[in-house]
Length: 267
Image 1 (cartoon, rainbow, N blue to C red):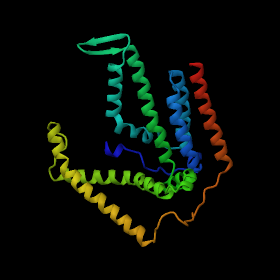
Image 2 (cartoon, helix red, strand yellow):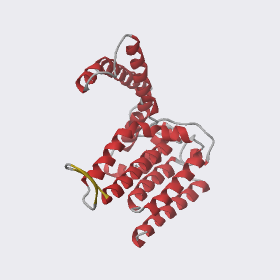
Image 3 (cartoon, rainbow, N blue to C red):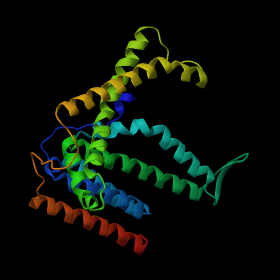
Image 4 (tube, one colour):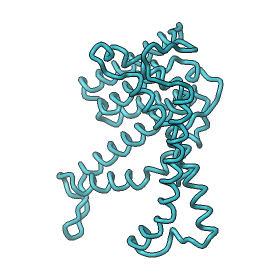
């Protein structure tokens, strides 16, 4: 399951999405997330599905790699679906003791499953098609107006970029440590919940030590390069909009407009 987490990873490819300005991808991802909650009927979710499928096709990222990240949230998705099925009041379809499944609960469970799935895939498209440096520059540019009220925009963007970049690194480190501990006889699968929690100690201790060591090495490397924040810094590759970026903005806003039309009309 650890190797199935794709958040924070970058998949190199020569696609239109890879060449888009990172600011466009940030705004597009945000608007897509908003549209997922604006749509409230299954015909609306069909439109979102078509849009998402088109983005996956344009990105040239393998579909298997894109959907692999859903395995990591399967438990959360299952719990969300079960809770919505059993706790939403309405017409009872099945009942066993105090457990009951309602028609409204099934509809709500389907909507929540679609929303959670699309949130993960939509966010993954952005990180898979954008390098960490581009994410930092794009986020810093979007938050630029906050500099007028003394918000440390560059530092915030840098921290978020580093945190996002460390996700695949720590997952890879976790996988290596787990394999090493299994080779030494550690058992992470058998036993009850308490025993499984205790068995995680040989994994968590070296993982925390490795994480702090990497953070210290990164801090020393930044200090050695005289890093002192965003004041007076310039960019090697300044962000500039191109015609494809304006076209992408137009497409995304038209898509969001369709979502609001579906909401108002009740489709």
